[in-house]
Amino acid sequence: MKKKLPLILTFVIGLALGIVVASWFILKYSSSTYEIQELANIAELENLSFRVYKDGDPTTSVIVIKYLIKKLEMYENNSSNAELYNTDRGIAHGRLCILYEKIGNKAMSENECKIAISLLGSKYKISTQKDLIEKINKIDSIKMDTKYPRKETRDNNTQ
Image (cartoon, rainbow, N blue to C red; front, side, top):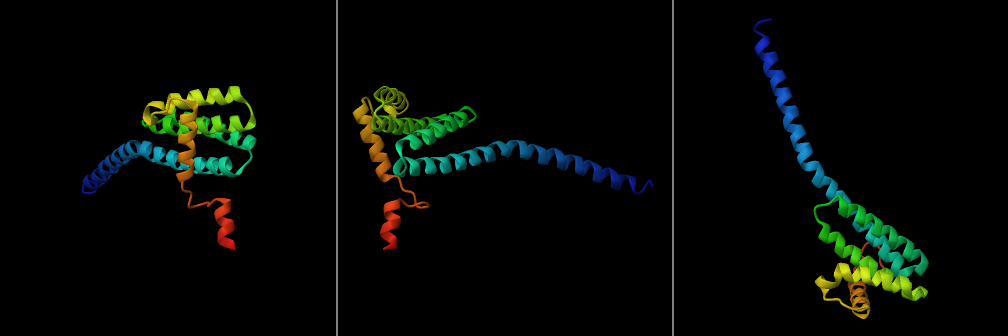
């Protein structure tokens, strides 16, 4: 038994040390893994909201974009990269500005415009609703979505 005691002691100490080191790595890297998953979730939700915004009816688009904004706010509160979420939120509020204008709700359009300008204004040199709409339309015209091509592209490719 005395001969096996050092072997057993070495095994137990190694096991304990391994658990401590493994726990440290899990704690250190799990937060960055969570943020990567957050970004993937946001990208997918933004993709979906963009599709609905471009191809859906305005009322449904408003609902989807409001949901996106709530998610962006939630992720922003739990993230170290708030600036990224501010830009995405600003674009979403800009799209809501355009949608409310289409629906005919001028008051909501102006409100969303103010929020969007507060989030995007200094970064993109936007100071008026006209500037905002031009910038959002420009962003939307270059936004590429290779996973789900726009309806017109699908129709042209099937002919």
